Image (cartoon, rainbow, N blue to C red; front, side, top):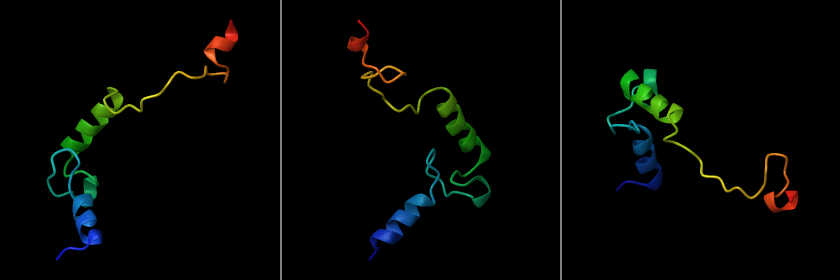
Amino acid sequence: MHTMTESSSARAERCPICRAPAMEKFAPFCSRRCADIDLHRWLGGVYAIPVTKDTDEDGTREEDES
């Protein structure tokens, strides 16, 4: 029977792109190709954190400016 620690460490040893076993040289990926795919996704904006436009950059609310 697998414990929670064993199953989560098994997931950590898999490439997040193709699920192949990760290689230490390219960790957490299995190859340079998968590492480059992940970099392209970051640079292309695929991995983006959604934000709400509650405040402006200077910290004031949009409705406060009028």
